[in-house]
Amino acid sequence: MYPACFLMKIIAILFTLFILGIIVLADQNAIPPFIKALYDFPNGDKVGHFILYGLLNLFLTLAFLRALPKRTSSRVVLSVGLTLALLITLEEFSQQYFSARTFDLIDLTASLLGVLIGGWVAVKIKK
Image (cartoon, rainbow, N blue to C red):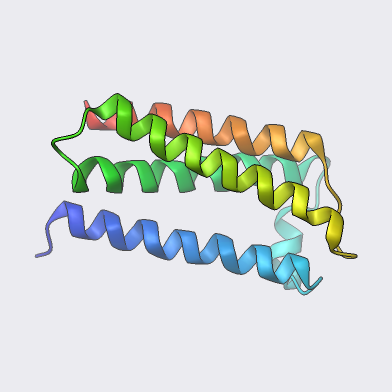
């Protein structure tokens, strides 16, 4: 059986690749219909941003907490969360340069709230 640290790293890597895949597909206006259907309700994209980025921060934070046990938990949580928040913000602003995408401050807010909650849940799980 693999140690929990290894499994959490694999989950974090796979989920990161999943998110990157969605971003690339969205930039090319090529999101499959079954994924679009998940967002086919009022503010569905905002809910999606919140859940996806919340889970991403949860998985990444748990992986880093387990991989860096000598670092203080608050430092790891803050570092992962701020790094992710910066990357998400840059990605949201970059949407202005893709014809299939539009910058939306509410999407960004939902994403950042997801990061915040994901980090909070990671801390609660780690305790």
